[in-house]
Length: 377
Image 1 (cartoon, one colour):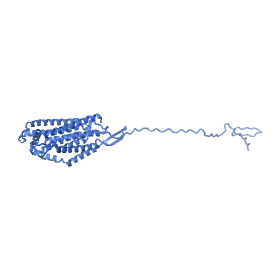
Image 2: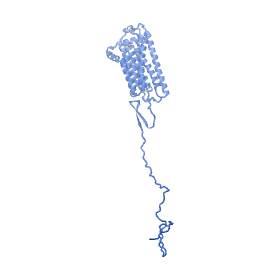
Image 3: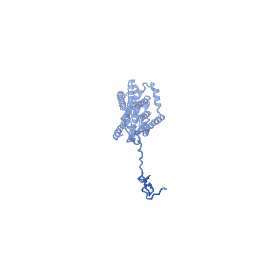
Image 4: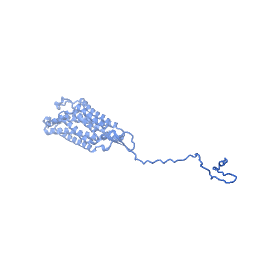
């Protein structure tokens, strides 16, 4: 991926991380440290009594499924999916995200003290409950799922992840385990770790990796972000309505006021979850880009990945040159040597026959022969 694209992506991740840290500190300062914030949180939590008996079984089933064992199984499964895709670095980052977010949640819960300001005396003895551990478990697994899924089903996975995270956060409030601010703070912790892991993924990329726009899901990301903003606006309106009755005892409020406060808390949790997942979906194609094929880039060589976009295992097809007609070599030409001796079969002149009285006839077969002729017998 180009250096300019990396810088832009890193800037968005830093902005996401800074927003999560600032939001977390703002929640702690207002909803934990001030009487004003504690009252609004308490009214919203008291509203969970409306219709609680109807959803108790569903809520208990959802929350009881979140345990250390189930978290370990989910983390191992997600890391295995990354390994199948040939992404060893991504597998390590997924484990780091899940472990870091949940450990940070528990450390923050132990480090933050909730002052007893005379609000919600019954729950004050339990101490601080911000951030929510169950919400952190659900959100970290959901974010990791979006990171490891192949691009073809990533958008669908993002919607499921956002819905599951929001449902888990609202369930903690419905069960009376956590206030709305507790669940929202847990989501912001996971968001901070998402930004940190995203920066590490950028550092682990190769120079040949390519962030393809075809793997992006801009419409789905915009839809998730828009839904998150809309839910946060609903939460703001509900908070303004609750502000009008914050000095009243929650037990003295009517069902409409309690339901408005409860619905506002649920909208705040859902809006934060949808915003977080939508922001990740907008950047994930740059955090987990396409891998360039290894080996020499010989012409006529093509690589087809197996298992979606798995990079190490490839099938190599080599283009063969077209067959050419073979030419028959020329026949050898025989050239006689120049020093071959010449065989003479006979005389150059015909034999001469002489007839005379005194001399017998002489037959010369070879006139060049100097020896005297022999007389006839």
